[in-house]
Image 1 (cartoon, rainbow, N blue to C red):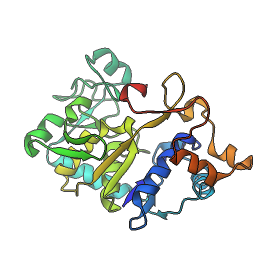
Image 2: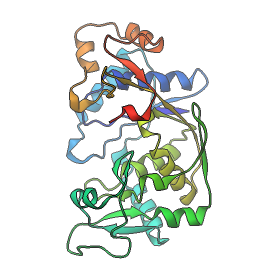
Image 3: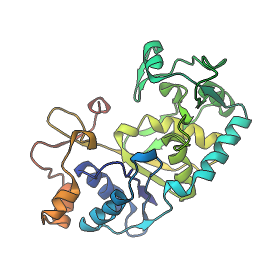
Image 4: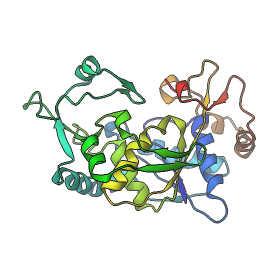
Length: 280
């Protein structure tokens, strides 16, 4: 059982289509292909975009079973955060992005790695606080962990590569970070194969630690390459990559496009990038 989990804060593009098709096909005739709308990104999440996602997937010729969207699961995120907080695994952090960028000595997959400034007490008690996972303490309690990727093989879990990530955001309207919400959702949905892009490979180190700390089942992972432009950058909503909805409204053949993507026949100027270094 696997899933496609888009966020309704921008339209789907060809990169999303490739990911959805990979997940759909990996589910196969005897599995289940799930659609989960990850809609807790504050005011950026739009109901109309989620409806468009469904139309895009149907246009591609995909069939799916839909599971509850993230906005219906806030209580589960709060409960998990309270458990981790009660076990001394979370600490408050009031640092701003600018402060972290200035103080960080390492750049990781998600940008500057948090240097642990607030681990022994917040720098500004009057400022809003996020809650970070104490990764070193978590690993001390779990011991060494591994996880398996279908393409890269067995991996030693290295959540320290991302530092003490945020699990509960400062913004009360967005109570959980991607790391916490996606990990809990995959467990709740019975996902046995997490299919997603290679740009999220490093995040899996953190997710494996959370599974161990929260006594969650451990799936397998499949991190596929991403469609990239000629300069090596992945397709992205923020850069105006061609929208599936535009192709659909222009009368293009969705199943034919899906067949081309399956066969590795990509539109001019696009290629499949399989190196993490491509995804800046």
